[in-house]
Image (cartoon, rainbow, N blue to C red; front, side, top):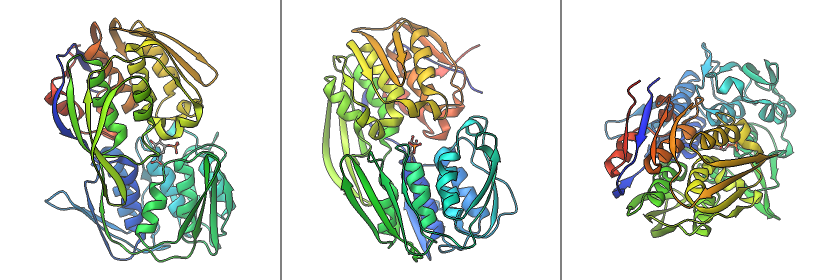
Length: 442
Ligand code: S3P
């Protein structure tokens, strides 16, 4: 564990690009492994979570290599072509990696053992196990559907029509990936639309995926027993990582930064909508399309923020951004109420509790009622002066380091290493903009 401290910084200035999108990176490796032929991936996130997925597909018979130019090449085994691994697949901290791979393996008749770190071993796998069992897979897990677990892929896979009980792109993606090797049509119905990178990328690889909107949600139909063809992919910058420098620039007076090449997929930009309502000055420039995803550069200027109500329906489009939004809310004038946050309890940590306890330790009034979080903004700088436990949660670690940059007194976190799961180079990049984050002297 490397403890880190962030102390009051001057304005942030400069132009940065941030690492590739984590969701898209996992999918690029997995679909590349399921395709025939070669897939070239530019801008792959080389964070620990994604590297675990790369190791997993290698253990299953695919090849995944990083070229000297940083471009990755995956040579796939074809749908249904994974070979039984001779080792336990360890997904570390990554809920996305494991849930997507459970789907990708559920309709291939091999046996695989899955595990992860202490955080992942606490997280529920029943949400993917239930639909995959209906497709013919057998799953034997610890009590509460926790890891480690053993998956025996279906010998005679069945297509299903599945309505998501929780708005989860991971569950949707697991079912769709399992559907690739099932006959007929696999359908997922989501009452609230979640990130659609799997659907987009499946089409890019030649699958037939038909999406219809229904109310605020979607119905997604996939034609099974398909052959995927490898191709080229460019991974845009991760909006969930961009969130940290964005909020830091908003709350540090005099800041002006530019972040280039950030994914603007509208199912990922709920934070920008919310910050806009709070009075944030964030300009989207140079909008373009890259690798089937909308991308733009963002110019962010320090702003006087005001508290807002964030509706529950917006949660799927900013689910990973609540920790850092709560930091922005602490600096805003007035109360910010965030509704529909139940899913935060089952992320890398119980983020609802982690955020509330962390903010309280920094001198901010917070309230949790059911799955609503209310933050009493100070319209100025919170006290800070807190030691935060990161709980194996990269986003808790980064959010409170951002708090420390603009609070009256420094904030420390006990474990900076967890940041490498999604945002390698975070400290260097932030300090390059003018932040002051350093290893804490115990
Ligand atoms: C992700 C979906 C979300 C998100 C996670 C990445 C994905 O999880 O929190 O970081 O890539 O599909 P849920 O599906 O559990 O909402």
